[in-house]
Image 1 (tube, rainbow, N blue to C red):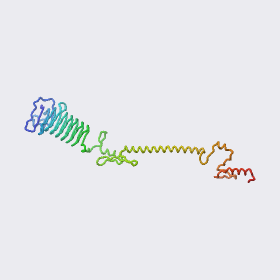
Image 2 (image 1 turned 180 degrees about the vertical axis):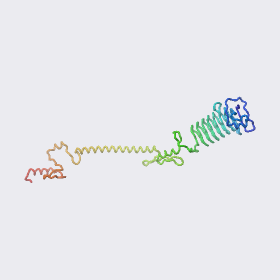
Image 3 (image 1 turned 135 degrees about the horizontal axis):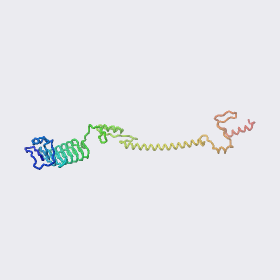
Image 4 (image 1 turned 30 degrees about the horizontal axis):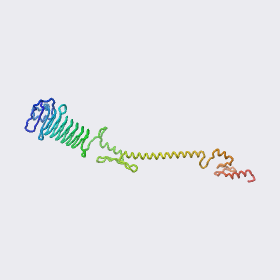
Amino acid sequence: MIRFLAIPTGNARPHRSTKQPRRTAARLSVLALSTAAFLPSYSHADDLVLDNLIVNAGTGGNPAASGAGSIAIGPGANANGESGGDYSAIAIGATSVADGRATVAVGENANVHGDRSSAFGVSSNVNANRALALGADTKVTAHGAVALGEGSVADRANTVSVGDAGSERQLVNLRAGTRDTDATNLSQLKPVVDALGGDAAVSADGTVRGPNYTIDGKSFNNIGNALTNLDGRVTTIDGRVSTVETDVKSIRTDVDDLGAQLDNGTTGLVRQRRRRERHAHADRPVERHWRHRRRDGRAAQGGRPDRPERQAARRDRVRRPDAR
């Protein structure tokens, strides 16, 4: 079993470590073809069993690998894992650094500092646990975050970033979301904006133009303020209606009182005397009704009742026959 293997780029020959082998070993089938040229006796991938692998392919410092199963390839590459379990580290590329349990750094100057994190791309950088940087110059500084694409920065935990402030990207060919936690595309957003009315719309550049409502000569650019103003006007109108209702009830009461007075004969063009008044003045001459008969028996229509003096003259003529 080979515990340590160094593959130089010059005329130096590969050598076997003379130290006591350790139990932990990593089978490196991917690198079998690279090492087969230097180790003819290990021409099959399954026959290559190493504790660590260090490959120096140029100038820039010697690579270093620590921890069982760690791999460092490239000048200045540094794989700093831990022994036991899956705690190995892999650093591939000049000056690449994989520092932490189960970390991977691939690319020139790629750096990973954190457990179970990975960085792929030139100058990609991860300084968090369980994070991923994919692309040149990507950067992750929050746990569980992902940075996708060149120059992307992920600085909030458990998020996915596809750009940076001022260098944003669009997600295209995104299907409409169907669940609460799915992303929403523009085809789902437009009907919502259109339903607001008030000239609200989604502009060609993707920005949303808010609504503009005009109520009583005043402009409001959101539904809340518009409804508040409208509610105030409704309250005012309700107060006016209540006032009118009160006035109508008062008028109705007055009309009812007037109707009662008309029925009782206490008001109107023709007033009826009360029963006591009629008995108290029973000795007075009784005025004839509007419709009365003349002496010759013919009916007189529409005439006014005779005055008391005329009635008295007629009575005198009846008593004195010679007065005819």
